[in-house]
Image 1 (cartoon, helix red, strand yellow):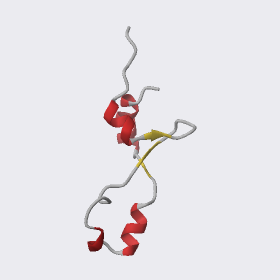
Image 2: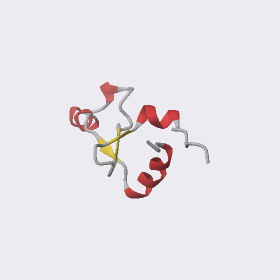
Image 3: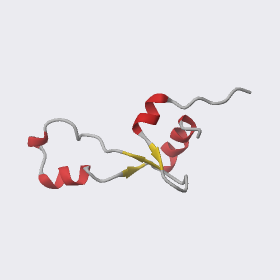
Image 4: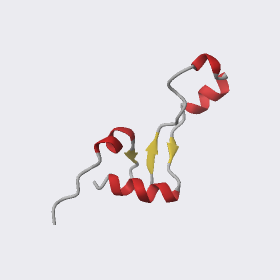
Length: 65
């Protein structure tokens, strides 16, 4: 059986955390039109986000290592 390849798009966007129990991701709506967003909204978008359980199972298959 050949080795599983890491999905290159997923590896650029997501990172596993130390215990392997979850995967970090960045939040959406952050890149454009910052003038239209409130300071509170922009501050919230800086925080790290994690996947929910259903998505975590899918993303975990894309990052085998």
